[in-house]
Length: 402
Image 1: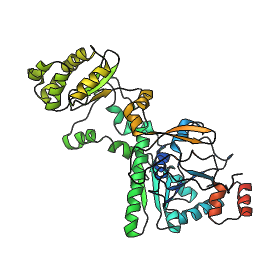
Image 2 (image 1 turned 135 degrees about the vertical axis):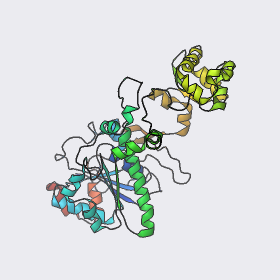
Image 3 (image 1 turned 90 degrees about the vertical axis):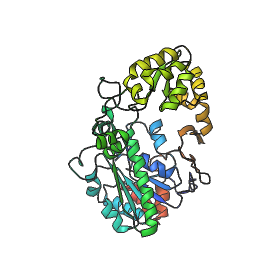
Image 4 (image 1 turned 30 degrees about the vertical axis):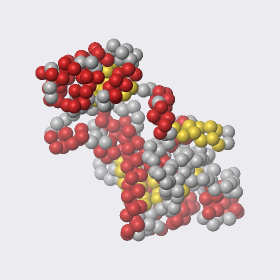
């Protein structure tokens, strides 16, 4: 049985240390959201079903695996059977003093359990309640199960990703899940700021589909404002030319020579100053019209030397460019190491490297301070904080309420 006499867990930052967050999330979009709160020091309580009652691993992989570990660091954890009326009563008791609840159930599930926004805000009007779904809380698709790749397809991303004519291609990360989580966290921050004025909480909602469409950005605007339906362009930027991938003598590199001045510097850096006066390339429109010929000419040059040679030569002239790194090469890069985004935490018998926050704050930075909790690790401590005595807690364990 979890112990209640462990020392208080350190906080990842002091920035959000005054806030308590109840984490009801599973899979990825929800945990991504809550990670933003935990990494900035909120008192996050991850709530899971008691062992033996859960129907499968929430991540589709081992609890000690890298995916689960990276999503759930800096949290405390407790078990709570939300299918039991006493479990729901305990959640409401926790919600009375909490600032935030985050969930990513299908829209009907939380209502059926009696833990929806209306139910929890009734016991705490200051509560900020965040919901992430596949397609929205209502509407014709609300009841459908949401999945990242489905949202990538329905949200238009797969139609513009990949080489022309090869068919739809998904992005190599779960971008709809991740962005929905990040937007939910942003919505929570906005609601907490607004609460300082009104004194009231509110319901924050986003979905994988909304997040994916928002991330189309200028590609969406091309349709909405100009009536253009974007197509696959492969590694070529659809509007800034030449921008793309070019083979070198030992690999590949990116060059982004957008704008007339940078294009002229690029021509000089590649040792081809005559390109600056070539009638085919005198303007962005002409370079777009003659894109294929220009790309072939650039690659004929870049293949004569190494990626490192061209990256230095072009950067020295102020031409945006860089290598195309594999993931191991990313973390070996001197600038990445300088930024310190990979953070190693030593604790117990574990020495784990996590992906840290990409945001820096000068006074209240974020740190990785704790590995993800074991299932129910802090159950007794959280219940004791609610004022429950040892006998009551033991009875709750016996009845699998926790």
